[in-house]
Image: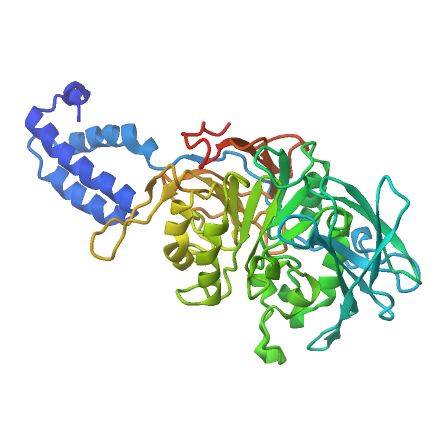
Length: 512
């Protein structure tokens, strides 16, 4: 500590050394988040200092403390969202409208249907009778039509019986090609289209959208509208869990699964949504006689898990353009020897960064979170898997669960071995950036209570609803942007240029 700082107080050098020790102890409180205990110790040391008076010493110590406080924490946005209740849209809202025609297909959505992007799973619901599970599809520049046969299923949940849920996988598609497709063959036919990704390769530009914890409120509708109208135009949506929030209704009202499916159709029927299971997909309700977890979710939303040798639809991987995407389940067993653990252990060696340079992980519960909501719920998964994430140089991990936005620095906390006491996150250029994007707008509202002081690993945080874009340019650079609902469609409330951890592992510039 520089003695000259205190000369204006007339404080002797011996006293300064005492202050130095006190200040060091107080600063440890910030670093270890045990501020009160260390502050008490530091205050006692100040009181025992030589003259001048303790009151003057407190003033001087306060000055020194203020000089250093900015290093404990990064940036909490100054933007304050207008405080208003988050309200679900009524059942007669136009976004929930049932399409006209007898047995007309509804809730149409697509996801990737294989490991490399040449397959698509088409899903839809017919309300009156099973009808056809066939999909007719053709390339945009061709009149030759192909057919694929799917399967139909139903389920019951307490006093609810689903419509007829169809899933049809189309294989052998060409890369970077627009396809039209039709469902409802033989009765009310509806037509949609999608574009397949470019061939897997390292320098292929590709743009991903990101939404989590969406629900079906007026804010949810704003989030989806902002995503659709963002000029960056996401080509595939990475969804980090918590879909309909039907379980927030009495008896887990599964009619709200139907309204949500109709709500997202305007996007999900035209571009793949890559699914992550969240806690609101569990739907475990023994008091209703429902003891099979994930029952509505697994009947309605399919994933290509078998293509990546997974044994369950909740953890799997896909390649899409320049990205290798690993989806994990926060609510399935993940301790050592479990199926998810063994699968992930075998999965990382399969990643070829010369083919897919960008390694992205999706999960629901964040591993780093500085909000007082769901605080440290991801800690056990972090302990299990963080070393693997660092060793394999994962570029970014996206999560939801916390209904706000946060972006971390590149940090790790992997040195701790029970006895060494090394349990503080430290800067690590091989570590991922952790981004919480659980701000879709659901009925439970915003998480607006943050831990203080802001931890050093937290680069930016804000309690607002929105979506994000991860725009891959080539094997070395990608641009990330977060967009709050209250802004114009092109406005970036937070952004960062990502440097690929395998091809360009240098320090990244700060956020705007």
